Image (cartoon, rainbow, N blue to C red; front, side, top):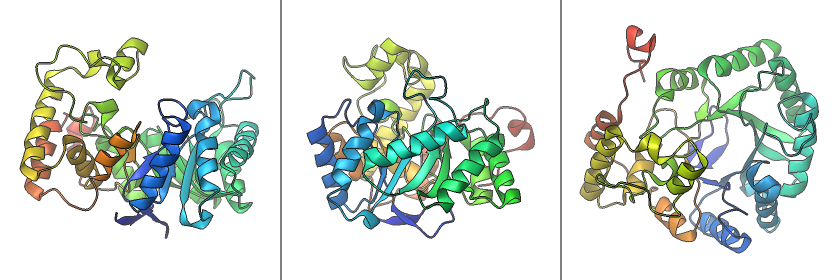
Length: 333
């Protein structure tokens, strides 16, 4: 496992981040603890969760595991934004909800501080200055070390960075966006902002719910029963079969299997490796459900795709930008 600086900070994190969204949901407590043990043995030091994952159970499992580990050896990330209860103030990015949430997360994680505290999505109901000043106060109080954002547009991220700079507040040092071979829209505007501002990118859903994991091939008529895509189709989640079973997806998967065969790697490992070699990316978040998935994903570390293989995957997965990006021209990487 190699290590990379988190944005423009001096903190180094493993080139893969272990996502804990499945902990307490698809993954039992014992399985979750074993996966964290294995991730640690492989050299990982970066775990991402959120207060909303399994209604706080994910944080509790991470906290249970972290209690038996040297705290300063780990970079623990969590998030705030979505509702944890039915109260009218138990949602959003107000000062009240952030402060209530961070204290609850600290209790569940059994720690005195959170390394990376991220806003889970934009909140149009709360003034941005209220959110950013509150996060700055948490850093000054020592309860949070760094702050980041997730699911922001380019203008939202740039505005937050500019306000923090003008006010002398702690800036966002990373962005957690949807990014993978099938979802490359952030390259049009968000990636240039991140590169220009020194914001690290830690992509979520790097295998897009299993679409890039090796189970899906041209000619299939439906997702495997019980798969993440099958669940997504039933519950109208964003990685559903109807949304992704397109000619573009099959073209991307054809090329992915070709490169996997050339490199002697699994398709999932190639898809992760492609993302790890994209400009600005710090560490993809591997949201594994089982030890088998984890072992496969860990195989993305310790090697590299050739420039030709990267170019082939780029060509197969490239999307036509929207206006005005297509009018101005592709942003320089």
